[in-house]
Image (cartoon, rainbow, N blue to C red; front, side, top):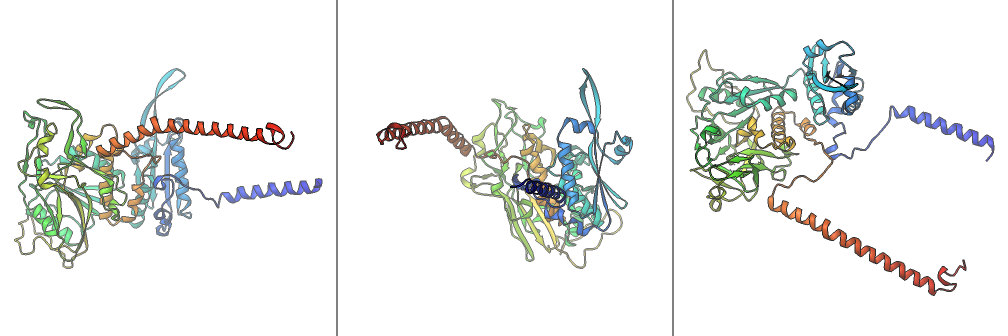
Length: 552
């Protein structure tokens, strides 16, 4: 090859490399090998530009100091730039340090939450203010994600908010707490309130008997078997009749969990609840809540508890961990079901009326049974909890969904007397409604954290995710449920819930690692050694000696 040809080839190679670098900014691809495609923008988000008429502005407020301390802000910024890249110019991104931009007061007024962290500089400790939050603006509407320090739900948070702002339809979660204590929401549902707000819902509380507008995206009726009267039930029934969307968390059996209520044997009082009409109304919709307590050996462990005669960590047969394999995988709410913790749950049976389609969401295992009255609730006496095991053994349904046109509970019944004014009329044309019923109410309260032994990702986190998925499905946001369902992780094996299966797995792993692998290494070593000796003898018998027949 001549010098001229070498120069031409070198010049052309450099030109091709330069062109590839230029094109790579416009055309690129990558392979996402994470579980559930965590780092891949979903089709819902990629097609969001078709709904956006005006420009959406996303501002990521992040402190430069935080960038220096953690790689997560860089990952978030990379994700945001990729997210914006699919918008075809309809979404614009700005990244700003509120301290360097002298915007501390503005960002705090918007609702961004600062984190004050002690750091050591030049041998001295100083407390610095750090920000990592997102502000979304569309026309005159502003939505804020106060704290962003994970990619886990970021795409869901962005897409749900932007779509709501573009459509001009706010996502409103109506809350009706059926409790004698009017402050129950503030005292017992902090976690649910926080996660609903973080997911972009506007939370609106309703008092029992208050008018429920049709504009509510989803209504969460949290307990209320003994509290909700005919006026409250009429408002719920009218909302459903018009095509409303309701999640019911109910118990037919009451368990008093107050510490002062525990008797000599460490058990808590449990009794049948007096139905004020809610359970009967649900039965007219097609769901019967049985007055029994579901019990199962593959259950949750209590935190450290002391009883009259023994102290320790106890397996509570009436605290059920619902497994992913016992859910209905073809329903949007449970398509990527990660599990659920239920406490003193009641089994359900379904007899859907004409025009209503019913599907189960999750069940127990086949090893479950139920306890009938009289109830015994002490985990310290497992034998007493197995009292009804032989008579009532079998799988139990714990959560169901129903959709269709429901009959009115007040057809043929006297209407309640309103406290003031007149009752709103029933809709002239009934609409297609959606209902979810879970035979347990404690799982939605902050009591869910009682089994959280520092592992938030497998206990309360799953309960809250289920509640958000239920609210999304009720509000007809089925397509964004899968975005939030994606999990963070390296794909390791999940913890095995069944104690017998867990023991078997541990024994198998121990046998393989302690005995099988060392023996296999020894056998392979012996085989390789014998093979080398055989090859050496073969070469020695060939003409020319041990070096072979080539004479070298």
